[in-house]
Image 1 (cartoon, rainbow, N blue to C red):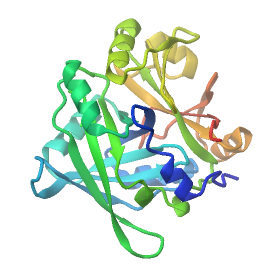
Image 2: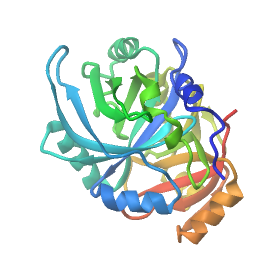
Image 3: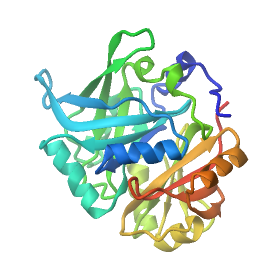
Image 4: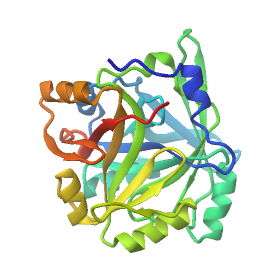
Length: 309
């Protein structure tokens, strides 16, 4: 179960959209204990990359410094899941801790782009007050035993304009470094990041903002949801009542990024694995099986059919 449908080379090549395109690249949990979360993710059937410590440049051409964070990821044939923890006392780490004080779980939604600088200019023109594009990098072990540097360009909207969380865009500059064959197979059959569920106090207002941010107009969905569709993956926006009715979990606060929608190879087999692991089923949602994430992660995960070709 769960054999990847693409080779790592194919998967890496298809992560970056064409110029002007937009995809749902990844979502990220902010974690108080990455070791406990890693154990629970394994119980849910995810295979994780090793812990990687992040560094960045705080200004163009400046020295590389610790971002105060470390991550592990679950790499998928389409997109990925990120799990971030703090490692030091940096401004970046302080932002993670402040977010976790609101609720445990998903706090970051990242779109994929081929042109971070162009997106940044658009965000400036649209009044999203982004900080400068951040050049992130981290060292990655390759399958042949060599070391490589994974590089990313990241444009972020200001938190004042996007109160749902850290909403950003990434340009993958070295996708082959992180999409490796050994990381694409998961016991739960996970293949793709199909979407992310976001609860908001005012759906109409949030839909207008997310449309301006992304350049994509949301469509009315069923059950009071608004659906922002990208070239790959979607954002599902709903108020507290709609999200609880659809997925079976009451939002702990608003706004709330509830969690990812994961496409799997065999939904019945995934359901059997989750049941064997004692993962609580909340609801059979239109997108798939909604389950409560363990406390080390927070929020919910939805598992349904993959759209990977």
